[in-house]
Image (cartoon, rainbow, N blue to C red; front, side, top):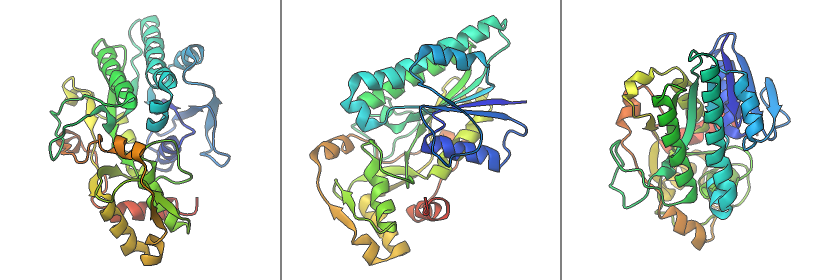
Length: 321
């Protein structure tokens, strides 16, 4: 039996991942456990454990169960990590340090036989400008935000603990996930989803940046697919480079809005209200805009090829949520 642990299992991506594992029977007969501070009332019906990923004692308890596959999704999002400096480092970096050391202790206690697959959700925030037209797999990781620095630090730890044989890990640099269901979160990128989700639900949406802003997107469905694909990947193919830029679709905010107009019409688009926010604009101006993720594509990772498709995924999977 495969034991699977999803850290951050109560969040949107954690729930999507758990649902995909169950729906597609990806790990037949697996024992699936979700860990988080809280869970949605109508969440995926599997075993849940409530606690704080920043609690070292709790992390050691989870590691003592020796899960075969660990999805490390729990994080403080970008805007909050920037505003609450100490919290961001405690949750986004120190929690990973405690987890990896707990897994190392289990590896050593097993005589070296225990070596779990760990899939860490990193971010394109590990990059900083100036950027080429498209970021290739050789581009330097040089974050310019606290969130990006925390994710980059975790990538290095995952690589080094894997090199030593304590875990078999990889880091997935997720695009901005759009269209997210539910309510807006504290991520600075939240508006990318909001300008689609809210109008489709008959609610006004605030656009805090110019419509010329270009960004890199993938759907929640694609994110869950990235994670399950990574869980079964032959990591020898990574040749020691355990962080991957993932596929997505690059478009401007104006192109997002045009896709929404094609899908839902002008009355829906009219619910988008430009309200410039200098803080958000300052952050967005330092974000990457387009990628050439050749390594990930060659390894079988896939995402949407248009923003129309991304909206369609939201309509199919989440509009009623």
